[in-house]
Structures are given as structure tokens and as C-alpha cells.
Image: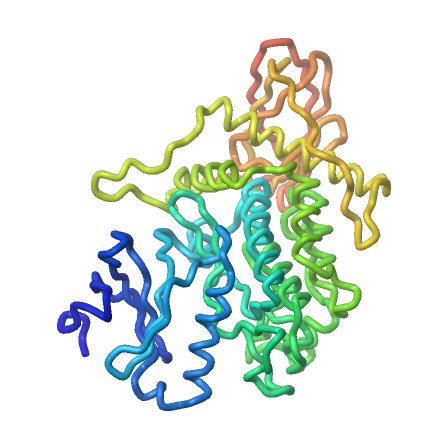
Length: 433
């Protein structure tokens, strides 16, 4: 029955069709009793006769319905109506992470860290309910117009207390994001989601996935996707984007370990590692910074009378970003020094370095996002084209390192209260057409 003919499903009023897939149709609807918009997923009438698919559909609702957390999509209802089955869930007005990456290509480390922190918080609760998602990927991470980050689509989730619907030896998931044990068809546990999280973080920071499916025309010696994953064969994130903080690169490495016993064991470890680098950022602040960054880059566009998100004053946002940059720098320095490490990996126990309330001298860097900036030999957070750093008065050595253009070095003298603008001059940089 077409969307135009069907005005209601049960107690819900249909607004429009959002998508169609092999399993069924997804609608945007309203729930008049509570005056809220919801998403309704249907199981096609013919598929409902398949007992295993109907059971999987029911289990998706039960698995997601048992989880109540601001970083997971809430399930409100599951019911049958006129011979069809439906799941009613929270509507998140925004985009999925896959769409965001198509627009921005990659996400600057400070914001990627906040998104990763929100995902880790949600994943921590998912695992606390003994549920394994098994399909973490950008398409299943929703980011709302107000900056909320939510894990979605529990269609192949596994409740560890229940018998698996998938037979042993049958791989389930999305190939480029699956752990080695998932590829082998072994029973997944929470460490499988940890591996997928590492792929997600790598992709956010670099704009590509660590493990690539060889093209049909490639050399026969090119290793298969499964071999790459099992061998841990991928280009380190910092080799692709040198400005990625070492603390985030270390987190990726410890998530992408092929052997589950040597991998990070829990989302709690991920959350704590990120909090050591970022500081204990409240969820509301995470949402505000994520939303502001996405709106500034045109991921979201105001519609109708909408005026966008409420942004904190520019000065306050700069302080937050500088604090985040200082935290990453401190974390990276501790990794390099080999001190203050936890047993499971190279994650420092340092907390965010406090930023002075009154800036001493301010330097604004205008650089390509791939550029690594160092001040007096110490790395600062990769700039996004317009980053600001506070410096103590005096002489400082600044170097810019670009993977394609090389190194540009400068000597500056910072004066209290003065603002400088600095950009690299590369001897080998080709002329622009």
C-alpha cells in the first residue's frame, strides 16, 4: 500500500516515507498522544512469514528497547497491525556519520574526539545490557542538528544471554568494519564492537577506512580484505594525517589489535582514555561543540524559520578548543615520554592542561588541515584552517610540516596582548593555477 493511501499505522499518523529496503519501509510519523515525531520501521508482509526474520525483527526491538541512554536511539514500541510488524523508535533530525563524512571528508581531531567520546558512552551502556551491536559503522551513527550523537540500528545485535540466531561459521556485519573473529564466523563479544569503534575513529580522522577491499583489477599479490584485517595491515593514521594527536593514534592501535585477548576489553576503557585526553567534557558541552562545528561547515542548513543552533560566544569556544588542544598535546607528550601509562596500553593518566584566563600573546595559524604545527618543538592540535594558540611573551620557533609540501620554519617574537597571524611558506609548494 502506498504512502499516499496509508494515513495511519496503528495509533501513529504517517508524515512521509523516509526509505525503503529489502526488509521493509521506514516512515516518519507523529504520535498524537505525546505530540512527538517518531520513526516507524516495517517488516514486509511476505518476510513476516519467515519465522527467522520475524524473530530477528522482534529481537532488534527487544535489544534496543532494553537500552535507555542518551547516546543510543530509543525504541518506543513494537507491534503487529493488519498482518504486518512494526518497530517505533526515536526520530533524530540530522544526518548519519557517513553523510557527514561525505560532506566534510574528515573531521578535525578535537571534534572527532568528542564524537568518539559520545559513541563510547553509548556503547558502554549497550555492553552493560549484555548486548553486542556487531554492526558499528558510520551509517549507524546518527548526529542530530543539535549535536546529539546516537548509536542506531540493532538489527543484527546479539544479546549474549540468549541463543544466537546466526549459526557459527556465518559472518555477520559490514566487511570493512568487522573484527577478525566476525569474519571467521565466530561468536562475537563486546571486543568485536571495540574493533569496529577503532575503524570508525580512524575513518573520522583520516577520511578513509584502514582496511581496503582490493579492486578486481589489482595485482594478484594484493592481500584480501580479511587477510589485511587479520594481519593488522593498515597505514597508521598519523602517516596519512600527521596532525592527528598521538593519544588518538594510540587509541586506534589498541582497538585494531587482531587478537581479541590483546585488544582493549571494554568501552569503559575507551571512554576513560578519551577523558584523559579531552578532560571530563559534559554531554551538553559535547553536543554544543559538535553542533557548532557541523553548522559552520554547512552540514546542516537552516530550514524555514529555523535559525540553527545556539552557539557559545566566539571567545568561549576558542578557550574550549585551546583547552582541548592543550589536553591532546599533554597526552601525546606523556605517551612519548613513556610515563603514566595504564596496563592495557599507552594512554596517559594526565588531565587537561588548564588554560590561562587572560591570554598572554595570541598567534593565529592559517594552514591546510593536513598540516602539523609545532611550537618550540612541541606539537599543537592540527589546525582546521584558522586555529588560535596563546603563547608566553618572548622568542618562539614555529614549524609547519605538510605531507606533500614539506617543512616551513619561522622565528617569532610574542608580545603580551599582541595577536599575530602566521602561515607557512613552502619552498617546494607548486604554484596555484
